[in-house]
Amino acid sequence: MVSTHPGGVQLSAQQYLPQASSKNINISPNQELLPLSAKVNSHDHLEIGGCDVITLVRQFGSPLYILDEETLRTTCRQYRESFQHYYKGQSQVLYASKAWSCLAVCAIAASEGLGIDVVSGGELYTALNAGVSPEKIYFHGNNKSREELVFATESGCTIVVDNWYELHTLVEIAENLERLGDGEMKGSFHPIRIMLRLTPGIECHTHEYIRTGHLDSKFGFDPNDLDELFSFVSKQSVLNCVGLHAHIGSQVFERQPHQDLAAVMVQWMGKAADYGLTVTELNVGGGLGIKYIESDDPPSIEEWVKPICEVIQTACAAENLPLPKLLCEPGRSLIATACVTAYTVGSSKVVPDIRTYLAVDGGMSDNPRPITYQSVYRTIVANRMSAPLTETVTIAGKHCESGDILIENAQLPKTQPGDVLVVMATGAYNYSMASNYNRLPRPAAVVVANGEANLILQRETYQDLIRQDCLPERLKN
Ligand SMILES: *Cc1c(COP(=O)(O)O)cnc(C)c1O
Image (cartoon, rainbow, N blue to C red; front, side, top):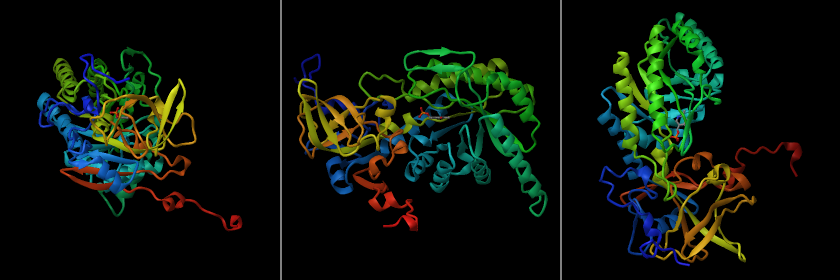
């Protein structure tokens, strides 16, 4: 069976190429399946960033994460420029680095003027080592350890306080620091810059959203506690509360939930003012969805930013409040489409009348999203881009786990061992959630631009796998 368009045109992997040049600002990368620089070259191979994907796999090995610098820079710019265009106050876009935290990705985002969101000491350490200025780093998390809070305080980043326990711990840490500052280092203490994370009571799903009076989430302060919270924080001279934060979910396609959130946050800001708290920053979180399969239809970056800015401006004018500095923190929509994963095809198994399994040299260890969230992906054979799609196969990983299926019912040309399969839109929550299950070394990653490929993550070796292992003397054979 050959897949065809309704018009009768035979489908090939070419259908996934971006439709126009990336210079066209109207292309929002989160609405594409392949990176903006994707092309088919004269060998009928997929090319990204001017690099032949088959050559990259030969050079750097398989599986391989391939990050297109142009796509990542374009998403960063579209976010930044959309805010500059639609928002009359100051704005700052942050990259939620949990989507893919490594030195190169943080450095690229920072070079585009973005700040970085971190949710652990490890992500903070990565961002600092990537050269990100601490003034542009925001530290989230619902259970930061005391060590992490001290590290964050010393680094000078802003701490997004999630709950009462953290708030009390932070006051204690700050008072200790202030006391130390009274001695030799007199005058060296500065109140710790914090924001408060609130649970807005807005839930969203891909195709609907519901409001609930009380949202069942592990994150953030209960909005019913606002009076107590603002009253407490306003009395802490060791803390400098600059803003409020909320994040409502991920892979969101509707725009209404974020507009509702923006309106609610302005109400909170007004309430903080009643307690003498001058809140100058509002962070509306991340969550804009991306296209993983043809039927996914997320708004563009610009379409997402514009109404949020409008709602905040209108609400501030109505409440007679000064415009806050507006922050948002996309993860997935910033990085996902910029990266693909290349695998090499190995064995296959035909289960008569049921399905054909095609196995690749990675799986749930480099992309745990299908087995964790039943996420769907599209894949193409990168060394035969114009071949008609004639087969329906199930792409299996190589792990000892029946559920290690990357893609069900993939439409592919006839394949053979050694073919290179490219799975699209793997930049977010793939490497960052990767594991060494079955002691598979984690893949390498390269960044590609203008025909050049540079390693950004080395492939792990077998030595790396046993580096943390200890064999006590008495257990040695
Ligand atoms: C996960 C998360 C984000 C990023 O979400 P995306 O859906 O990847 O954009 C932003 N802020 C917070 C607090 C998060 O937990």
